[in-house]
Image 1 (cartoon, helix red, strand yellow):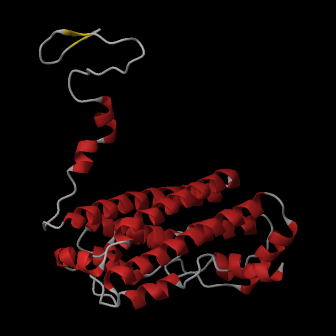
Image 2 (cartoon, rainbow, N blue to C red):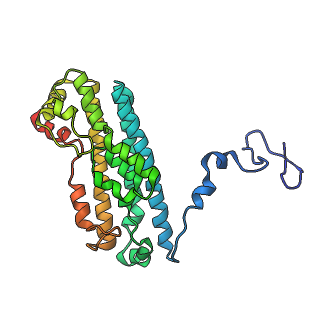
Length: 282
């Protein structure tokens, strides 16, 4: 039995019912901050689908942050030779990207007329400017110093991304681990300029081909987990491309990019390239 917060009268409930009176905010609210989350959708038009667009975009931002967290965790576990923990984290990353892909559905079903009804409200805003997404790309080996430019006016974001640009990605950490395990990863790969995009190496391809031909242990499972991440992320890029084609055709992107043609180039890039090409030699 508890007291009603307003009247002071006792509130009776049976032992198998949830507690209802907490004398103020709920523990759920204290932990999740749901009221804050629901206050973050602030449409600037009267179009009902703008709210849907805002919610989906904010959900994606949260997942980008979560993906960056687990990719960083996986990278650091690889650096510490904990392959099992790294592989488990990569499996979580696959699930995060699956959720990101599912989040496209509400946007992907907007007609051009529906999207155009609120598109001008975006101004020059574009997901291309997302700092969390940029951190994910850097962790996946998609490095580019020019991608820091949009974040110069936000010092904390710029500093974090500048650091991420110079740090190893998850694939760099995996190749360093293979070298420590006695595999012939070339020095020029291990000591490459980390601020540049990863470039395929025939010698690394040979290493993965050997692992896939002879290893039934944790290095093979690591390779498959990395491949799963790469496949799902490429799928997310393709989903982005298709959603854009449906909503706006070949128009210029909101951030000034070439729109569909820009996304097509991004969707064709292979992450962790030797994990794909090595399979031809097994």
